[in-house]
Amino acid sequence: AESEQQKLSNHLDLVEVNLFKQLSQRHEFLASMATLQAVQGDLAGAVEQVRTVRAEIASTRKQEVECNLLVSRMHKRRQRYEDLLRRLELVATVQHGPPSIKLLLSTKEFVTALDVFDSTMTMLAEDLKGIAAVQGVMSQMKELSASIDRRLEGEFMQCVVNSQLHPGESDELVGASQLVVIIDCLQRRNC
Image (cartoon, rainbow, N blue to C red; front, side):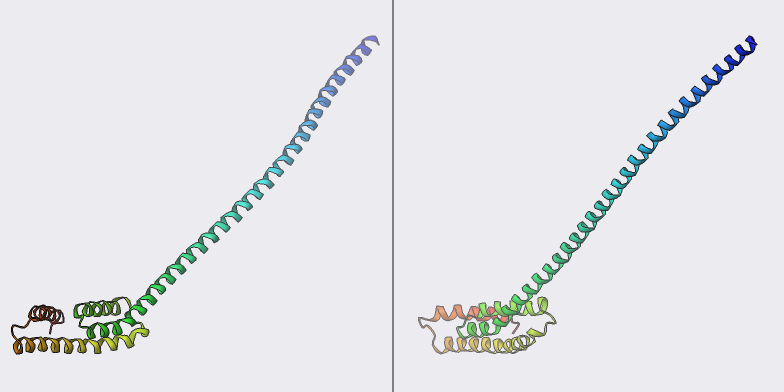
């Protein structure tokens, strides 16, 4: 019976050792599970932080895109206003053209009158083409064109007649230079 008791005691020792090993493994497993749960909690927190950061980045990008679009629209609007302002200034300049030309013709400033006429016609033909606000000026300029031609031809005839009627007068130099100016103006006008 002693040998059986010895056997049972050995078996009991083996059972205790195995039980101890299993309990030890289960304890390690339970500790690992607790650690795993902590890691999962940390991971869930990190995922939530990533979501928050992504949402902030998306919001920032959206704001940046909206700001860029707004800047682009404002830049285009500014360009349109600048073009409108430039055209309005040209309209004002063109509207002053006919009275200025008439005044210059009355003071016999033919070269300057032709310069103003040519620049006004260029603005009307190129920069203000098709703008209804300057149609009246266009018709005035057409009338002035014929008036300039008649005025130059009249001045030319008067200079020629004066030089023929009063040869050798002291104003001969002034008359000759004025005649050259009138001839140059007539050539510019293709008369």
